[in-house]
Image (tube, rainbow, N blue to C red; front, side, top):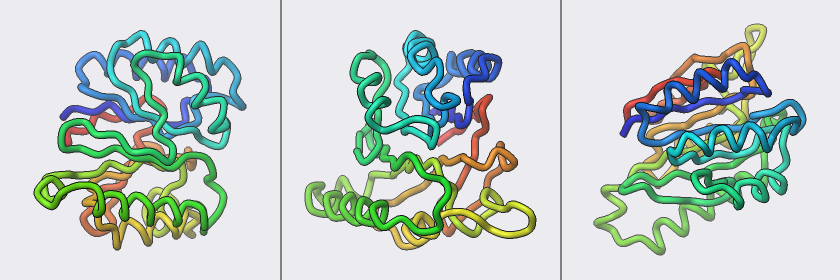
Length: 206
């Protein structure tokens, strides 16, 4: 599966055009939030992305609210809001937790991670579980990687790191952002590849 992933566009129309151009050859699109500067031109940007005609799965960042993003996405044909939700594309499960970016711990996020694992194990038969791989979208980067380093120290989210290291749902990829200084960087946490795909996007073969 060929993916164009992007994050932290913040209303930059040149970056948006680059994403749209790359999306022509992609199977799906993934966005980890902050399409805008405090929701300015959110409708315009979402309509532009929807017009590409490729499935886009996204979460909100700290510049949008979950309520407004969910409301806008319900009206669009090709965009699905996956904050605190899971969707399947073949044997790939896509799930996300949006917002935030400033805290090292997030109790509500931890509760969500526990729930999706419980639902995955309880509702999906064993043969399908073995074949399923998961892509996690978060706006915050996990703690302790190249993606959360600022000034020689780490400022990411420990709840994400703990989940990625111990998850039972075969997470293969974590798309995140928030720290613009670390755009286009990648790292690994155990078997999980962690990528900040930047505002102009990164092509990923998964």
